[in-house]
Length: 446
Image (cartoon, rainbow, N blue to C red; front, side):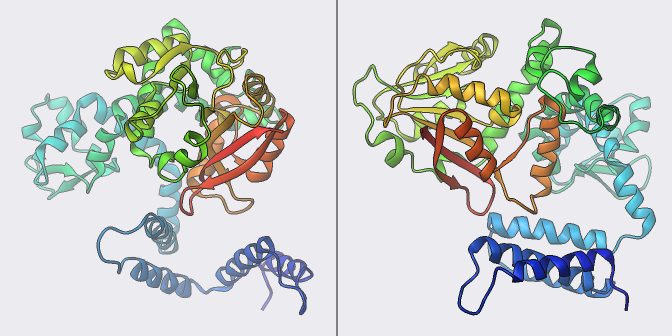
């Protein structure tokens, strides 16, 4: 049997890795991981179609047999294998539909938001409501006959017109409401949608060169010379700016806190100055201040100030929306300019640097480094550290979003270390959440 080019490539990779293994020397962890990955891919490449289906069905059964709520690791594995199983049993027409229809999901969810459909279905409970009970105009009734078939968040229960019922699909409508999709939908459909549409055209036109912060797909799509964040700060973008801040707050509220896997008490509180006027944490580009609220809630007896820094308009929104203003101070600050708070114990920067190319990241880090105290201050980067191979679909997608938005990127451990070094800093240690890629990178002066 003639081997496919993919199989030949994998065999060659295994042969090359085998040169790093000998009878008297154990392979390094990196070589072991690479060997496991490549041999698994080779096994998959040699499978017959029915063997692929058998393997995936077995994997679903194995991961689905746990009592109670599955762990995050099991959930990720279940999502992966069920998706692979779905792909394995598709016919060609279904594959085409899967690739062609996702843009419609954005449009349908956007329409559902405008109709108030998700909030209504959430209130309706598990039995759902008939279209007649939705109490909308006749023209909207006709639209609603189509929406449930396309939306990933609602489903039809029965199919007798005009009295068929529509209800939440599992937790779909709850999820849409819980993550503030009334803000998330417009942000991604109205603002980022045109950028995604123009991305292939832009990359082809520029011969696939890496974008910069002010020359990239967003500028091409929206005909502006401003960076993404300067553009969103324009007066006519006030609604999108508000949607962005609400979305980021919702994302942080729904994510597992970095405080759950980073030893904040041991690494930051211990060894800090105990004076009331000393600064414990500066949240650089901290949005609406939810990180500082969580710190204060988890450690109510902390000594030292907590300071929120963000652009003046964002700080104003934070002061309007947060009732617990006494938990921290707020300062309007552009992180490309000199850091005004000197000698803080920790400068916390959450998912800011992935928004920017290396050159801008160097500027941000150098401004903080100039304010740090040697052998005392630390930078805590709450960022993604992607693996050298096989990144997840989620973070591969986010990487492309960052490229389109601002020329940013997700980075590997080596890239984070190189970036820190270029700003006169050193990565001291990295903590990672479970087996995921969300991490806290502790950085000190070199």
